[in-house]
Amino acid sequence: MTPSKQQLSAARVLVVGDAMLDRYWHGTVDRISPEAPVPVVKVTREEERIGAAANVAYNVSTLGAQASFLGVVGDDEPGHRLERLLRETGIRTYLKRDAGLHTTVKLRVIGRQQQLLRLDFENEPDHEVLAMQTEAFAQLVPQHEAVLFSDYGKGGLAHIPSMIASARGAGRTVLVDPKGSDYGRYRGATIITPNRAELQDVVGRWTSEDDLRTRAQNLRAALDLDALLVTRSEEGMTLYDAQGHLHVTAQAREVFDVTGAGDTVIATLATMAAAGLSLRDALPIANRAGGIVVGKFGTATVSYEELFA
Image (cartoon, rainbow, N blue to C red; front, side):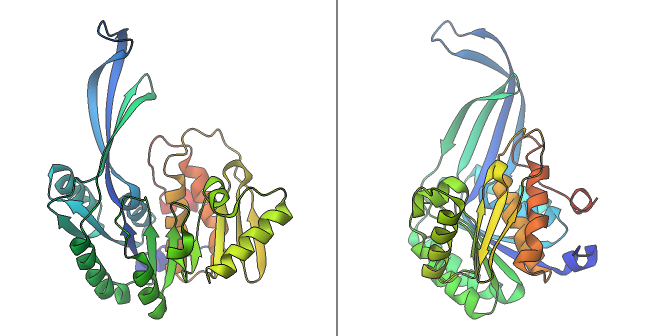
């Protein structure tokens, strides 16, 4: 089933999670430093992109749906820059500012088409600001068909259990891109989308497909989820639900860069769910979107035209 552009333009997805600014310094490398055995990068170009959970919202918007983003940032230059980038891309932006917070920035130094170094600037938000976020969330939920939590483990989703409960209570589809090994905080969501390594950290190493199926279904039941989607890189992805399981194979291509592919997959699932598709119908579309985005450099997105060409 292919949703029309009209269906997607009416679909509304609320993304909640850790906001981040991705900065890239591109340069030339012609020599090694006389001070230490490191390359000297002469920076020729600087680039800024929306990162982490904010990139998930960007993916929703690029598909042609209505994206809203709720998150916490610092009252600093990267926070204001991120807000400007979000607004410029047409994302409805609801940022709570914490004066004591450094907006998370990942600065990547790129030379000769490869990443030489990454610098991270971050700390955790204040609980009062998170309480303000939860209040805003309650007002925003009724205006959206799907709610997507993108957890990057930066502290922006400390109150996620109550937010999941209120969104499900309002009859919304709730999708979670999880982080860490405590999945109890995602209890009651519609679907969570761990990758292979993330799931292994939670359920242990499996020995066969049958073993994986048992572990995945046991976790799904324990967490009271409608479905569990495991993204498995070159092995494709498998959805586990009450009907059993559904597997889609990866699309063969020269993998260039897997950065942000998980963001694209869950953003596409949420968008299709908001447009009225079942998770099983949305799965092959999300798989296709993930396949397209790995062929692009850096955190990238997919358009309606690319996806349904």
